Image (cartoon, rainbow over all chains, first blue to last red; front, side):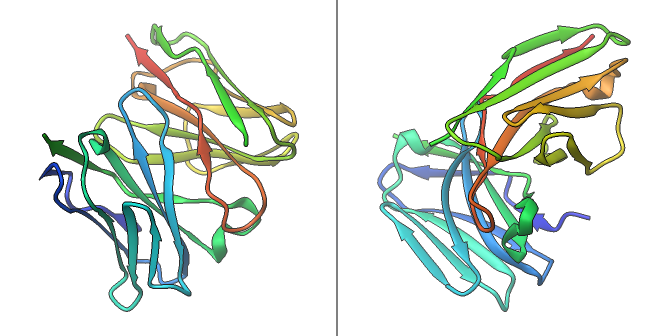
Length: 115
Length: 113
C-alpha cells in the first residue's frame, strides 16, 4: 500500500520555465511533508518542508503548496535551471514523525531541465 | 550541522556471502538513525531505525539486521546475501525531535552476483 504517491516518473522542462512536481497521499494523519532532491550515486538532500497548519512555504526558487482536502502537495521551481535536474522525492510523516521521526517516501520524479 | 559517513561507496558480493555496511555520524549526539534501501526504479524503503544505543526497530521482514553499538554508529548486516538484496543503501539521521528533516549519507551501491 503506497501511502505517498508520485504518479509522474519523469518531467522535462525548459530552462527558465516553471517545474511543477506533484505528490498525493492517502493517510489523513500525515501532518508534515518534505521534498528531497537526489543526484545519481548520492544521498537525497533536504530541500523544503511544510507543516499541515500551512498551505504554502517558500524558500528562494522553491515553493511547496499543500492542499489538505485533496491530500495533494506540489513543489514549484521557478525559474528552473539545468542544475535542478535530479530525482525529487516527496515524503510525509504523522504526528510530525513522533519520537522516531519516521518518514514515508514516494517513488520519486526525475526532472530534466533542458538548456 | 551533522555529517554522515557511509562506506564502502560500492560493493560487489557473491550470493551467500556476509555483509557489513557501516554508517557513522559527526556533529551531533543522540541522533535517530535510519537505514533505507532504494531498489532499481523504486522509492526509498525504510528498513531499520534506532532511537538509541542498542535499540533497533525493523520495518520490513528481510534477510538483513541492524545494530547500533555506539551512539553515532549504525551497522547493517547480513549472514547470507540474496540476489534480492541488491540495491542502493542509505543511512540517515535526524536530531531535534519532531518535525525535523532527516539527512542522508551518500549511500552504498550493493550488487549481488
